[in-house]
Structure formats: C-alpha cells, structure tokens
Image (cartoon, rainbow, N blue to C red; front, side, top):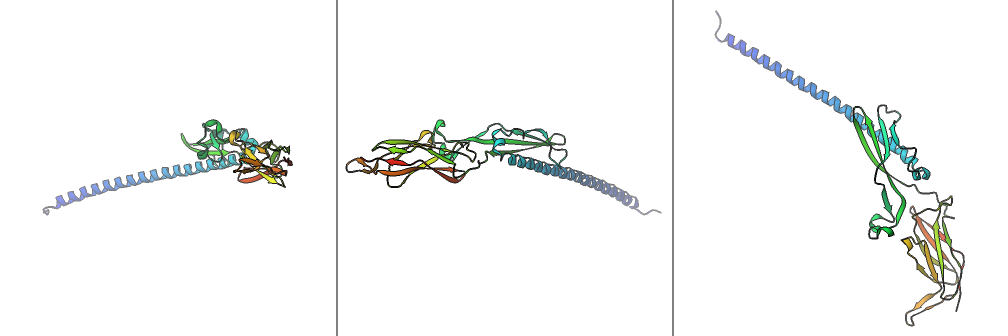
Length: 267
C-alpha cells in the first residue's frame, strides 16, 4: 500500500533536478563565453602592444636618420614609404609618411613673435616635419602614431662661426657699416641666427645704431660720436682704436666674432 504524498515528492525532486541542471548549464555557458572573450581581449591587447613597439622602433630609427642634416633637408627622402616591416614582428605592415601641415617655428618663441606682422616674424627655416606612422595587422586592425622631427643642430667651430665685415678709419662724426653672418664648421651659412653688437674699446669709442632689418641684428651702424652732453645738446668724441664685437646665440650657446680694427678720428 502506497504512502500518501510519495508521488508528489518524487515529482518535486525531479523538477528541482531539471531546474538545477538548466541553471548549471546556463552558468557554464556564460563562463565559457567570458573565457572566450577574455582570450580574444588578451590577444588583441597583445597585438596592440606589439603594434606600439613596432611604431616606436621604426620612429626611433627615423629620428636617428634625421640627425643627419642632409637627410632632414631632403625631406626624409628614402626613409618613408608603405609596406615596410620591422624585424622580429611578422604580420605587421608599416606606412611612414609626412603628415600634412608642416609647422612653422619662430625664435625666440612663437608667443613672443605673435605680436609682429607676418613679414617681420623671425622664422626658423626648416621648421618642424610632422610624420605619421601607421601599423596594420590582422583583418583591418591598425594603429597610428604621430611625431615631429626638427632640424638637427649643425656642427659649429667656435673660432670661425661668426664672421664680421667692416672696420677701418671713421672720421669725426662719421659712420661705418658692419655685418655679421653665422656659419657651420664646413663654412655653410646657418639661417635664423640673431646677433647683438658691442664696441670693444682699446683707447677710442663710438656709438652703435643697431639696424633692425628683419629683426635679425645681422647689421649695425657705428658712429664716431661718444658721451652726449645733455646741457649743450651735443656729442663728444673719443678718438682712438676699437673693434666691433658681434655675439650670436645658436642652440643655447653663445659665439662671438670681431671686426677688423677701427680707428676713430678726432676733430
């Protein structure tokens, strides 16, 4: 004789078992999905990390090549292109190209030069070259990295860097013109360098009237007059010998050059 409620309990136990199995299956499926996504994410992260290394390595080599002034002035000719590869990183294709919008740079700073009209701003020739590095891999995945390359400093010989023209005899209250240029160790002119002037007196002296042509200070006028008398409104004279000193500042270093001897005449 059966016991009341036995069939009901058996039915409940079976239903609970089915529900539990369904929940376990759903949980296992969700865990497998998460694991699969995790593997995909790790793979993409690894590929992205490798792509960054590829771009950094290639740009480092490009910066090293651009340290050669000839390479830089050629516009990085021979060092740009597409379909490039990096040793040790198969499956990654590199494209190196000049990005549009070369930046003009100014001396001593863009902020200070912004107050002047376009024709009077002191521009550094060569400026800055923007370069875009694109690394592609897999099915349509890519990474872009931008960098800017500036012209490398030239090799300078301090003894011959600054060349000054002018000198000789200057009569009473007369004037003489002087000019200065800046050159690299090979003798080639270096553009964008500014100059300041002073008189190195031996026993004579005069007054500098600096010309501001293009605001470079590359030329100056020296007058044979000295010590203005505010009472009489006249200039005095200091006859004797002196020379003009031009000081240039390039890449954070000062260089000087001297004119020939100057002989100030008396009254």
